[in-house]
Amino acid sequence: MARKISLNFIMLFLELVVKVKNCTNPNLLPITGSCDILKEYCRFLEIVEKTYNKRFPKASFKHAIEIAMEEGILTDYLDRKSREVINMLCAKYDYKMDIAVKKQEAFEDGQQAKAEADALAFLKEGDSPEKIARCIGLPLETVLELKEKNL
Image (cartoon, rainbow, N blue to C red; front, side, top):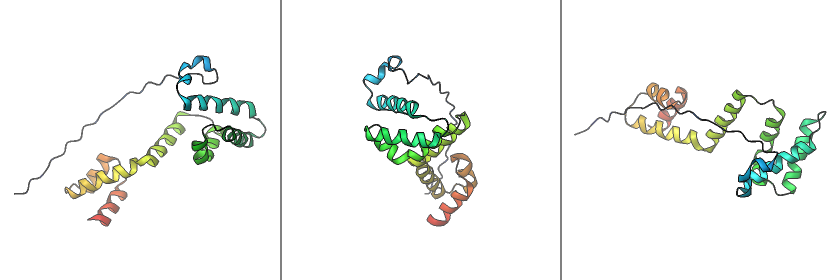
């Protein structure tokens, strides 16, 4: 006897509070003593400040990245993401841009694949593509492509 499974979606809202610390003064960040990556990041900021040239900002940021990599600072990250780092340093910071970058990084880290796997599971259960797109947050076109390719 076949059973239909009913799925209920629960919306959960979280509030994130971020405490910002000045990374240019190591005395204000005692955690740098036990966190190598944070220590390297603080050193990278020092290099950026020392090499910054107002007339040629992009070139000075590229130079800062080269110096940091020569010193072995954040080498893996800077090797993979140097263009993004330069763009972030060149751009005026604003909240919307930060959120956009975070979303892009989240998708790069596998969120897209997970959402697609979830959508495929719901498609196999018989849920409509419109409902899946709305609940999971994928574009309807993506859900329809998944349905076409896999069912």
